[in-house]
Length: 102
Image (cartoon, rainbow, N blue to C red; front, side):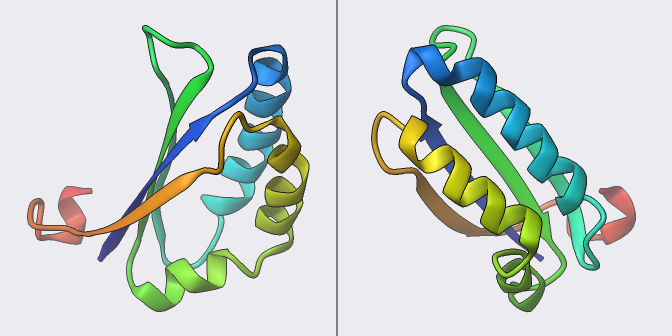
Protein backbone atom coordinates (compact mmCIF):
# COMPACT_ATOMS: atom_id res chain seq x y z
CA UNK A 1 0.00 0.00 0.00
CA UNK A 2 1.02 3.58 -0.55
CA UNK A 3 -0.55 6.70 0.90
CA UNK A 4 0.10 10.17 -0.48
CA UNK A 5 -0.71 13.15 1.67
CA UNK A 6 -1.15 16.29 -0.39
CA UNK A 7 -1.21 19.72 1.20
CA UNK A 8 -3.00 22.46 -0.73
CA UNK A 9 -3.41 26.14 0.13
CA UNK A 10 -6.06 27.88 -1.94
CA UNK A 11 -6.55 31.58 -2.59
CA UNK A 12 -9.51 32.35 -0.26
CA UNK A 13 -11.90 33.57 -2.96
CA UNK A 14 -11.57 30.21 -4.76
CA UNK A 15 -12.27 27.90 -1.80
CA UNK A 16 -15.79 26.95 -2.91
CA UNK A 17 -14.65 26.37 -6.51
CA UNK A 18 -11.74 24.27 -5.26
CA UNK A 19 -14.05 22.13 -3.14
CA UNK A 20 -16.41 21.53 -6.07
CA UNK A 21 -13.57 20.57 -8.43
CA UNK A 22 -11.94 18.36 -5.82
CA UNK A 23 -15.22 16.55 -5.13
CA UNK A 24 -15.45 15.77 -8.86
CA UNK A 25 -11.92 14.36 -8.75
CA UNK A 26 -12.80 12.39 -5.60
CA UNK A 27 -15.81 10.77 -7.28
CA UNK A 28 -13.63 9.54 -10.14
CA UNK A 29 -10.72 8.54 -7.92
CA UNK A 30 -12.72 6.25 -5.64
CA UNK A 31 -13.84 4.31 -8.74
CA UNK A 32 -10.27 3.54 -9.82
CA UNK A 33 -8.91 0.02 -9.59
CA UNK A 34 -6.46 -0.02 -6.71
CA UNK A 35 -7.91 2.96 -4.85
CA UNK A 36 -8.52 2.32 -1.16
CA UNK A 37 -9.34 5.85 0.07
CA UNK A 38 -9.47 9.36 -1.27
CA UNK A 39 -10.29 11.80 1.52
CA UNK A 40 -10.65 15.56 1.24
CA UNK A 41 -9.95 17.38 4.49
CA UNK A 42 -10.42 21.09 5.16
CA UNK A 43 -8.45 22.58 8.03
CA UNK A 44 -10.66 23.95 10.79
CA UNK A 45 -8.37 26.84 11.69
CA UNK A 46 -7.67 27.83 8.06
CA UNK A 47 -10.53 27.12 5.63
CA UNK A 48 -8.26 27.85 2.65
CA UNK A 49 -5.95 24.95 3.60
CA UNK A 50 -6.70 21.38 2.59
CA UNK A 51 -5.18 17.95 2.97
CA UNK A 52 -5.89 15.18 0.48
CA UNK A 53 -5.35 11.66 1.80
CA UNK A 54 -4.94 9.22 -1.08
CA UNK A 55 -4.45 5.50 -0.43
CA UNK A 56 -3.70 3.02 -3.21
CA UNK A 57 -2.90 -0.68 -3.26
CA UNK A 58 0.42 -0.08 -5.02
CA UNK A 59 2.74 2.56 -6.43
CA UNK A 60 1.56 1.50 -9.89
CA UNK A 61 -2.08 2.19 -9.00
CA UNK A 62 -1.10 5.59 -7.55
CA UNK A 63 0.83 6.41 -10.74
CA UNK A 64 -2.12 5.41 -12.94
CA UNK A 65 -4.30 7.84 -10.97
CA UNK A 66 -2.19 10.68 -12.35
CA UNK A 67 -3.02 9.58 -15.90
CA UNK A 68 -6.80 9.61 -15.49
CA UNK A 69 -9.01 12.20 -17.18
CA UNK A 70 -10.58 13.28 -13.87
CA UNK A 71 -7.17 13.90 -12.25
CA UNK A 72 -5.80 15.80 -15.26
CA UNK A 73 -8.94 17.96 -15.37
CA UNK A 74 -8.63 18.64 -11.61
CA UNK A 75 -4.91 19.46 -11.85
CA UNK A 76 -5.40 21.97 -14.65
CA UNK A 77 -8.57 23.49 -13.18
CA UNK A 78 -7.31 24.12 -9.65
CA UNK A 79 -3.73 25.19 -10.44
CA UNK A 80 -4.54 28.91 -10.82
CA UNK A 81 -6.50 28.85 -7.54
CA UNK A 82 -3.56 27.74 -5.42
CA UNK A 83 -1.82 30.28 -3.19
CA UNK A 84 1.36 28.21 -3.56
CA UNK A 85 2.25 24.94 -5.30
CA UNK A 86 0.69 21.85 -3.73
CA UNK A 87 2.98 19.53 -1.78
CA UNK A 88 2.54 15.78 -1.96
CA UNK A 89 4.48 13.28 0.12
CA UNK A 90 4.20 9.50 -0.35
CA UNK A 91 4.10 7.35 2.77
CA UNK A 92 4.52 3.65 3.48
CA UNK A 93 1.66 2.26 5.55
CA UNK A 94 2.75 0.61 8.79
CA UNK A 95 -0.69 -0.03 10.31
CA UNK A 96 -3.26 -1.19 9.59
CA UNK A 97 -1.34 -3.82 7.67
CA UNK A 98 -4.34 -5.78 6.42
CA UNK A 99 -6.44 -4.41 3.60
CA UNK A 100 -9.57 -5.72 5.32
CA UNK A 101 -8.93 -3.18 8.09
CA UNK A 102 -9.28 -0.31 5.62
